[in-house]
Image 1 (cartoon, rainbow, N blue to C red):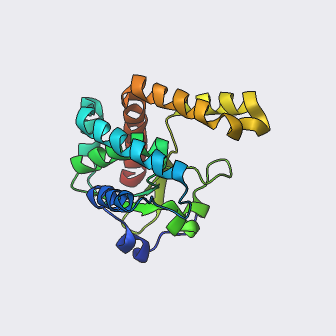
Image 2 (image 1 turned 90 degrees about the horizontal axis):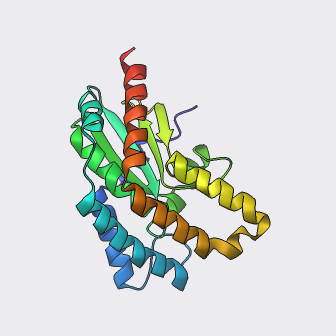
Length: 209
């Protein structure tokens, strides 16, 4: 894959704290990130702020994951596509930020999906613009791999739900969102941690071979 992500994207990238501040600032104006400024999207964002606070406070990284992250011995850039209204992002972005903090060689850059369509377009999931999407780059901005938009078990739940309702999926979105958030509450970030441990191990093998 050609290097879609350029240095100007990295310059536009936010830290996790800056991302959280931007969401708070927009909510203070009754807004959220992205072009859709509906009341429902603002309410989703308000819920997500509470979710992110909870994940920040309760997440404890697995020792095995920490060991893998501490092995990163070359500069990596984690580009994370997200939006403030996204329920999956609220559950995953905080723990991914904690992971990035473990290694001094991992630089985290958050990009808003709808402000960078050219980046999102290069990292689709089954043809869709699903977020969050984590892209791991090396120092030359070459893609080592990706993760997202949600843990495999949650994705399977999504696939089953969508198969059940087909074209009427959007009519049942509230039901889906409730089931998804219940799954995240029960999982307590364990699935994403396990998947990232495997991803980091694979990316390390690719960079050190």
